[in-house]
Structures are given as structure tokens and as C-alpha cells.
Length: 160
Image 1 (cartoon, one colour):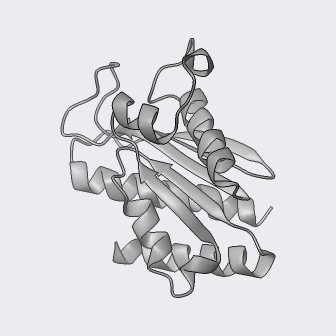
Image 2 (tube, one colour):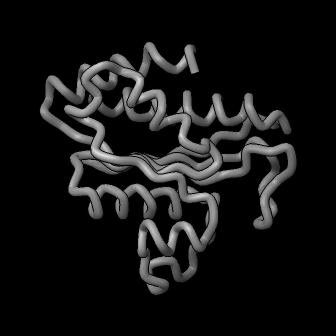
């Protein structure tokens, strides 16, 4: 997590300076994104809440996305990550929503994505999504890579 802290500190400072807030919904990152943002002193000024949504049952309970909104979508895609980010933002009333869905490894997911695949989205004044492919089955390294990519996506778009 140490390698994530400099970006998290810059993001926290920028969010505080702008009076903005964030809500996080992560899956294969397992809470690492939230932990890095919360490690910054004064995080309560910008971090409203986060959820680790690892299964459909968890998503149903925590996000309450209506089945009609998921129609035609599958997890581990950019459109699904955007839906998650929009939903967490709306449910928490935050300036920004960040979401991730993927397969950290050591095997792929049930949708046919290989280990090391993740889709990450941010929703706020702008909406952006990316796909990360590490090509690695290393679960811990993938979790770190996905969290770093999520922080980089957010930081880049906070600067815009």
C-alpha cells in the first residue's frame, strides 16, 4: 500500500481544496483503494464511504441496482464499472464516484476474462473508464496495479 499513498495524498488534498467528496465501490481491489484514500490524515473531509462489492448478492444489497439497469451488461466491463460508479455516487450524494470490477487472480473470472483484467470508472463532473490488463496471475500484484490505475485515473481527471 505504501506505493499508493503519494497519489492518495495528492488526491485528498485536491478534493479538500475543491470542497469535493468521493464514494468508492470496488470489487477485485478488495478495499485497497478505500484504504489508501483513508490513510491520508483529514480524509473525513472528502471520503464519504466505500463498499467492497465482490458478488452479485453483495451488489444487490449494497448498491441496489435495479435489474433493468443491468440489462445487457456484464460485470468486468467498462459499462458496468460506469454503472457502479454512477450508483455509488448517487447513493452517497458525492461529487465523485469511483468503481472497479475485474479478476485479480490467480485465475480468470466466470465471464471469460483472464486474471489481471479490471475495468475502472470515475463519475463526477466528467465520466471516464479504462480497462487494465496486467497479463499476470499474481493476485496481490494485480490488486496493487488496479488500485494504482484507479488512483491515476481519478488524479488525472481531477486536474482537468
